[in-house]
Amino acid sequence: MSTPLEGAPAPDGAAARRRPEQLLLAFTGELMLAGGAGPVPAAVLISVLGELGAGEAATRAALTRMAGRGLLAPVRVGRTVAYGLTPQSERVLGEARDRVFDDDPFAPRGTGWTLVSFSVPETRRDVRHRVRAQLVWAGFGLLRDGLWIAPGEVDVAQALGGVRDEDPDEGVELLAFRAHEVPGFSAASSVRTAWRLEEMRQRHEQFQERWAGREPDVAHALRDVTALVADWLDLLRAVPRLPAEHLAVDWPGARSVGTFRRLHAALAGPARAELARRLS
Image (cartoon, rainbow, N blue to C red; front, side, top):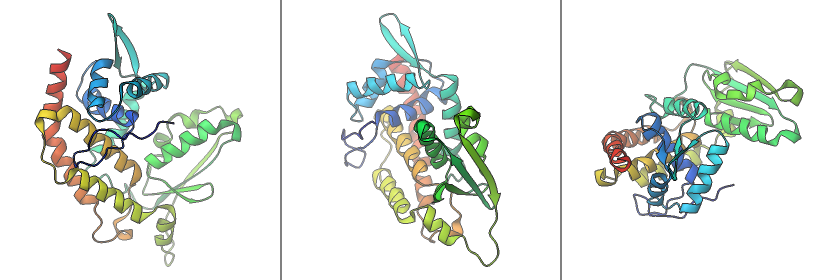
């Protein structure tokens, strides 16, 4: 497992703690999927991540891991190696961007609740880890042993990706259903059980401390938009879509959305232009 970075200063001067994979996913989603850049030389990726505190060895190792998982496609250009997107990474990054640029990425879609239960044999711990990770990204919280819950009408088939296609002989079982509250039985306690609301508030506050007071630094747009999107994806992964009625009136979600949109709007164009210059 990768170790969080203790690298270059974050925009607020605090030490950044971003894994190379986080930064690479942010870079590929922002500059390659959305920005249309073709395969990017490893040297350019190493340089950008280096500005954010990632060492060359750590970045190369992350590139190798992501290529091994089918998320990047290495392409040899003369004596150098570049990395492009794969059909799998285009799908994953496209789904992530749907939430990154959602009008309200912290509000549930639809009404009621979606529940998922799954069973995976001990011999398939890789599948169990993948299911849990995908459920968390889709906004599910663990209600009790084996039962996960998410507000609204979550597309479970999309959320669980290829897990549904696992060979049934392998013993992977999935069950999903929708539910509505019974009058007189509030879901408030379930929300407190499945999600640690104070920790989520702290994650919002950390994001704002790092970015809210920052003016766009167009001269370092490529570095900063990579860090900004990486931090935003990390926040979205940590804070699911929750009904407003179960949150405090001063919940910081709207402030975080405003901060991200303001900086992204200012940095995205200059970052693409900077990458084009580096690739020319």
